[in-house]
Amino acid sequence: MTGDPLPPVLLVGCGKMGGALLKGWLAHGILRAVVVEPATVATKEFAGRAEVVPDAERLPADFTPAAVILAIKPQEMANVLPAYARFAKNAVFVSIMAGRTISVMDALLGGASVVRAMPNTPAAIGQGFTVAVAGRAVSADQKALADRLLAATGEVAWVEGESLLDPVTAVSGGGPAYVFLLAELLEKAAVDQGVPQDLARRMARATVAGSGALLAASPEDAGALRQAVTSPKGTTERALAVLMDKEAWPKLVPEAIDAATHRSRELAS
Ligand SMILES: NC(=O)c1ccc[n+]([C@@H]2O[C@H](COP(=O)([O-])OP(=O)(O)OC[C@H]3O[C@@H](n4cnc5c(N)ncnc54)[C@H](OP(=O)(O)O)[C@@H]3O)[C@@H](O)[C@H]2O)c1
Image 1: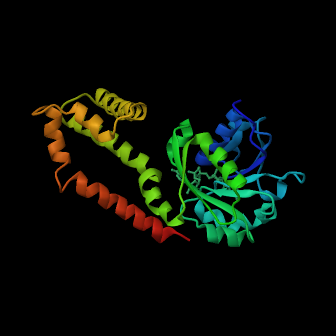
Image 2: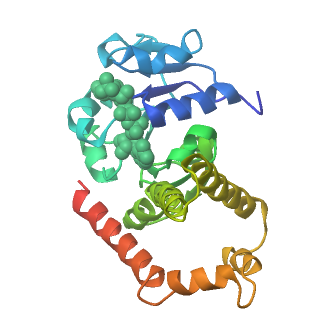
Image 3: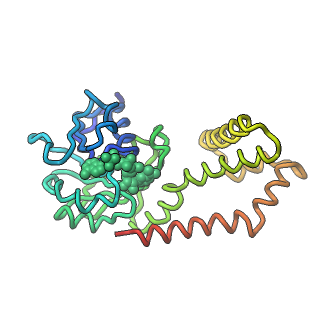
């Protein structure tokens, strides 16, 4: 355990993201973790360390959480939230549901302190990046608690305007998918050049993972690290001339992020 234990927390939805958060809280130390999760398989690994119930009706009567974490699918929100309104007096609500706005959650809870956050999947190994925004009713202490809870899966950054969560969703929320696509395409290109499938797969995975680790460990900008691999008139320079053509990545990446940002705005409710 590192530092003071976390106060009692109620986790609603213990799937991939909720489970990653719970794992982090248990590793840190938490006074009491209660989980609402209907899928028994999702909570098996937490047996004996967290109290699990299948629905809100079966929560322990004496339980007063300091925070309620909403990690269910966005489409479940309207049906699920009203059952938790009774905790709104004492708890801060922290939602990681994509596209669900603070004002809608506030209304469903009959008035509540709501933090909205967007994590990403490296959270599963404690290397996530979460961007959060606090609703107007959230106190400084509640924000600090939300920060501690979200930091269990990696880095946390706070922004003021909720509308920033649309580009955040496009860049860091979806970002792992773009990086995995790069690994897929590198593997396929290697095979196309005659590299055996197994080796192509190992090379692509290790190159993406190793480059990410180097970027994380280095104080240098990504551009400087790129230039360090690029000898004048060499092979990398030749490949980058294709990728950095003004019609290629410099055009496509902003277009992709713009498309995802627009979609995030469309889905907001
Ligand atoms: N995965 C990502 O990359 C990512 C990134 C950013 C944000 N998010 C957000 O994180 C949230 C969770 O995503 P996820 O990938 O962890 O989804 P997930 O693995 O499907 O987890 C959701 C869990 O909630 C459970 N559940 C369903 N109804 C419930 C209820 N009434 N009460 C309590 N639990 C209930 C589900 O059980 P069943 O399986 O039985 O339905 C499932 O285990 C989503 O809102 C998503 O938008 C995800």
